[in-house]
Image (cartoon, rainbow, N blue to C red; front, side, top):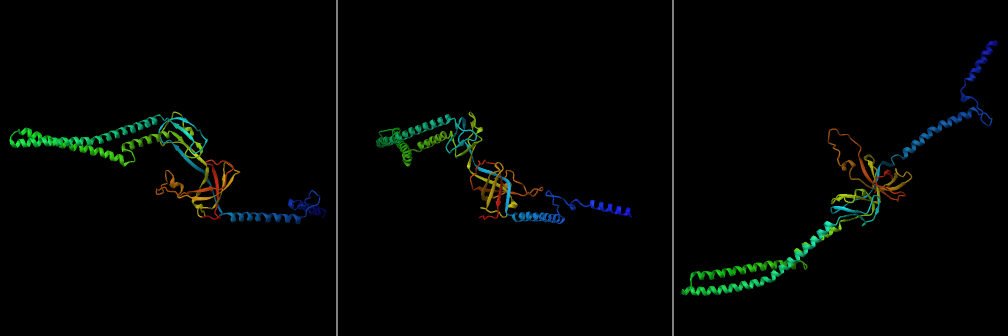
Length: 371
């Protein structure tokens, strides 16, 4: 009996020691033991809070999803003006360097003006030659009336001589040779009159052309046009800024370098007019409208967030305007989600300088009212 009781006691002891740790009474710091019902209620509360939290997070995501579209394929854009010389020549001076701020009309660089000064001098000489020629024509026109009068006198004299020879020929007092010579003299005098009249008509034509313009002969006017062109080319040897902004790529300009007409020499970035070009997926455009509000974040300035709005949506995808458009009619065609450039206007001033090409992240609120 004693042995059985001892075994029962040992089994009872062992079973109590095998209880889980969570079912054992624990004594807190204040010395008052916790009861088992309190621990069970705490466990149920924790188990209930976890799914409630998951439901709350899921509900928030469900409620807020579909209210905006965003992309990080977006970059700051600014107006850029490529500056090229309108005349060719050797660069003799540069007045700017990279990142300089310039105003409209500021001198950028200069081209050797010597060849254009020579061309201007040649044009002035052409004007002088034309004026001399016109004066000679006027003198000729004035002398043409004298030639006509002389020719008429010659005709009258030759005709009188011919009449005498004819009268003598009828009486038999002259030879046939003299008669024919007198007749030939009349014809020559008449030809000289016709030539004098033609010269007079030509001179009068030049004089009429001179009177058709306001005090100028066409030859002089053409020479003056050449002079104006030469003077314009000379003025273009000084290249000025077409707009205000910041200079870029000015390191291309070197003194002594030959500048080719029409070849871009440098770029001026107008940093006062900035916008963002965001390339959204075509699947994001369903609810997007012009005028909807947008939020812009910058990779370069994490603490800067600017407000903007959708200014315009591109007329074509980026692949349509690429140098080598996709050939979708080929046999190895693979469907790719296209991106459409969307222009985002910046509605507020930036506390940090905006640089062309900065990476941004754009979020468009498609709930906002658009146009």
